[in-house]
Image 1: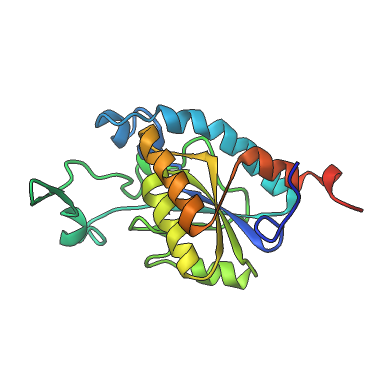
Image 2 (image 1 turned 120 degrees about the vertical axis):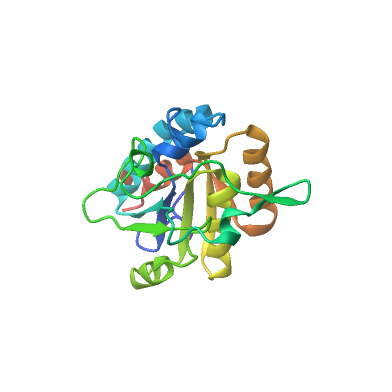
Amino acid sequence: MVGTTFRNAPGTAALIVVDVQNDFCDPAGVCGTAGRDTSLAVDMVPRLERLLESARGAGVLVVFVQTMHDETTDSPVWLSRRVVDGEPVAARTSTCRPGSWGAEFYRVAPAPGEPVVVKHRYSAFTGTDLDTLLRTAGITSLLLTGVATDVCVDSTLRDGLFHDYHVTLVKDCCASYHEEGHAATVQTVNRHFGAVTTGGELADAWDPALRPV
């Protein structure tokens, strides 16, 4: 059993849920219909649901991050970020358009009063009020979950460290579209950026029956 530490203590730790949205997770979403394997995300979400229940029961702040893209934020640089054979290639489809089914959360949703941070780039810190929200709440440690492990979760985790937060990757409550990308991020985080844990370990730490009286 693990105990509560400065990294997961209710009151100073926040559980960050990144981009668990239909376009990224549901097989019928943009990524799934474009050929990406969403099965790892589908399999991950029940574990995330259990973790959310544990976090809420322990009084841990939960912050949902939601990607949105439209013509006001899709700059030429952003749209041509991918390069093939030395040339920029524009994305064929756009994910998470405002008001669309694809932008809605997939199987999880904020509870009343839980904040939602809308982002337009990979990192949830870029162009958002996430840092202000966290500091106002007295948060010093971030527990990262969501999709994709090696893209938006990774980008947010690294920026979290650069903003002087302790960062922890909850490895079984995030997912990528391929195992090797997920595994590489887990290894890199563990070596260079923060800690790695599981939802079960966090639930054990937050279980009131395990806390000293």
